[in-house]
Length: 350
Image (cartoon, rainbow, N blue to C red; front, side, top):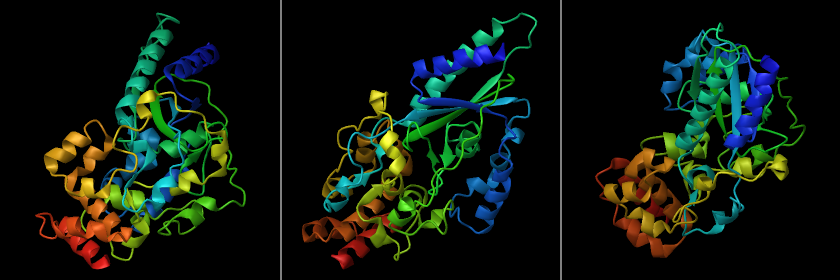
């Protein structure tokens, strides 16, 4: 009975727009706890204190919701139409990570997960009135859930040397979502690592954020530095940021497995106007209201104007474009200390 339900669930997940689905047990990732403990002990999480505060749950999904019997992992493609690295030479323009160019994926994936979860409850309930009510919880990125490890355990793919999930059927351009349920569904065979001797992702990192294959030091990662890190960025790392003003796609973009990437089905993941190579001079002068208006409904909005303009000024400092010096000078007295520091650094660089 559960096998038939799982088959119908897979078909429904595909109808909802998901690229792949797999099932594992909540306790299928015992290795996560030790890996997380080492990561935190070495301070590689940087300013992400929330990782420490919820380490018990993040390291043991079974502890997050003890009633859960199965974890349904789902992948949704957001494969870009254009080469995400093509704009890195446009020095007077900013590069925004592909995932942040469209609508906020948290909202889109969560709505899909909730619809799928409601379908599952209805289908499971129709199998017998004497069965205990099915319960579910859905998670997308913001909860202490080790999505990538669970996705590997559920057979969606494997965590590559860049620590992101890779799948033979979709490359690495995917969002992940999880449905925890009290249903006891058949599990899938875990994914197997297929990176071989390839190290393109490691060699592509502009700031050497990978101490070793399958390990990441977030403190050197451009995605972390431009999104999570508040205050001034270490001056030694600023040149490596280049013109990346929100996130970084380098390690994802060079992966050979992307030759199998599937096209994104959700049109709202397509880049919105003003997110593909926007002029740095235009972004640098945004005030708080202008920033909020420009990035409403975008994941970019959550870092706030100050951190965003700080990033833009690092890009201006790396541009070598003397025409941008005046806009940097105008921000050397900005009320935010990190913005003012970035402006002074940019002026000095130019």
